Image (tube, rainbow, N blue to C red):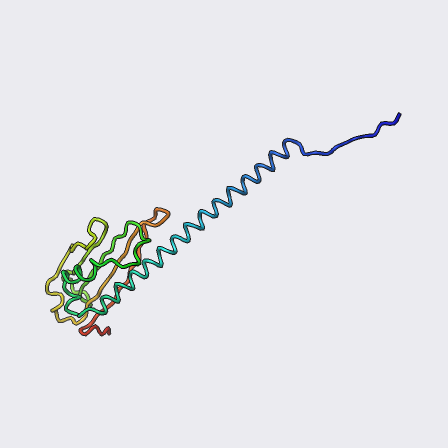
Length: 169
């Protein structure tokens, strides 16, 4: 009688469990990487939108008369009150426009803040003589701050100088 050895090789239960754990770890890492990538892409989209909002606002100021730039009510009603089309991706946007003399002499500035509770802007400080002062230069600062996709508060700022006739020095 001859007996043939019928040995079969197979994976043990421990090896199968380790393989499943490695696959689960790989899957979780892939999902975490994808989530970080999507947040990074959304943050880049927000940064691009903020840059476009700043550029659109500055172009509006460049097309405005010097005396109107120095008038808080004009800036509020004709510039800040008009939302740009680029600000849609920016969550909880706060836009602060500050117009003051350059070089600063300690006098008050015109500051307008626009947010979700004041969609047409709110004048928080004003200097009615700003456009008539003999400085000849006005500095416009635009600050945007918003809550990003990952919950972090982000900000972008742009400043420019305007001279009589809107000819920058």
